[in-house]
Length: 77
Image (cartoon, rainbow, N blue to C red):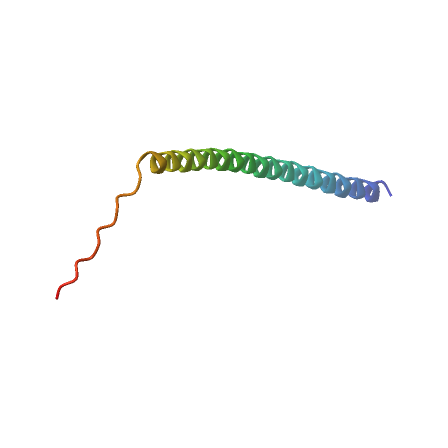
């Protein structure tokens, strides 16, 4: 009977160790995912800021320099 209890205890300890290992791996994967998501958000915000600044500068340049007048086509007779 003692041998039976020992094997049951060993199986339980093995299952517990496996669950702990999976939990650690899951936590590591979650942390990695969250860190990548945060980095992506920061990069997106920076790119958006740069794009908006460029668009504002382009609009300002367009207002300051009017478009050149188009030349009329000369008809040949």
